[in-house]
Length: 469
Image 1: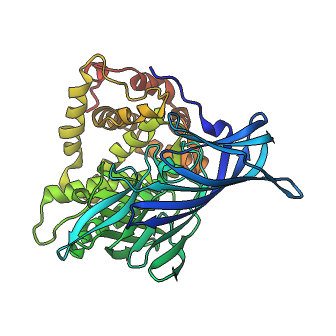
Image 2 (image 1 turned 90 degrees about the horizontal axis):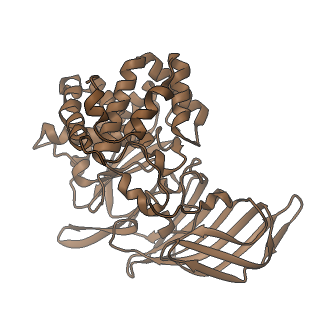
Image 3 (image 1 turned 30 degrees about the vertical axis):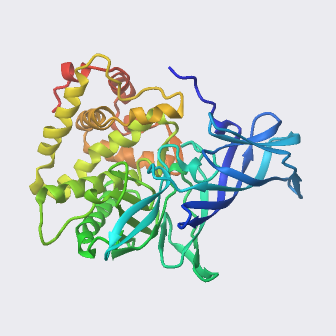
């Protein structure tokens, strides 16, 4: 077991990031400036620490806010600790608990490893081109800007991007202001985001086009792809997104809190899709569908992925796990409600038969091994996070357990409990006991006693005892 990493959120609690990033496609690099406003907590010390990875720092200042004035605390030294992925701002004087603005100037590289900021290559009209995309889950926001890169460190973001003038630019929220600067650059300011975790911040810049419609509640839904893809390949994904979004708003009895929802099919993408709030990114194969050469399996796959990612807009984004050991709170939940949505919207697809033929079998095949991981397990260090994204256990087995639970308490109690969970914990972080509490209150049953053993025990238990399916 690796050494438990220190949580930087214990020392500084961010409230807002005012972030500007200048993207340089020619040199595959970027420069940036961020003002992090928040509260220093704990004991007085001579440094403030943030996450970073492979960034270079040129300047920093610390400004303390008292009730009546501001005081600048001189930064005597900027030290990067590469093993811990930290940047430490040192002062010769003590920094006391209180409200601070920390301003940092930095630069970094756009790399091909498909995390942080990376290029997505494509060819259009015989010309090679590329998009710039972000992928910050699980702990890669630190590769684009210094931050407290932990799920519990929720804050609002004011993002400004400087990009090539010819490129279209997207982020989590609508564009607030746009202006040309110099001869070839475009400066785009986006509206302030909701309070959210750093891994959900996202942006895309490049030669992209879209189709657009609105939900019955007026949410703008747009589906995008590179210029290499025909626009009509986006119609199915956009139509499904609207239907699924409307279904979840009604089913969860909780509004979608953003003005718009963008979906982007990326030419290069490490995972299947990513639920960035208001800007969901996908592999092209998980979003594009040819209307002239229809395939039911392709359309079912696209709809399933969209259903999964849209459920995260509530379960994961609006309410977020406190730490990565409760990743299952995100993924197991999305892996079951994706079927609930499609069963209602496409009854002819026989969705629960698909669930049984895939999720039940794949989880059973993995769960027969004695040393397989449990659904919920401790994460001590960020290097361990990638090991828990296990499709058979955290996704499929977790979904089976929740299906068992929902069948046990009934749909009415489940929906009531979820509505109360979203209302009580909106824009906050939770652990599994918070969900169990609301489902117990709604159902009159002890959900913690029922469910916790299934989550923390590994191997064979589900094969031996589950007869629900």
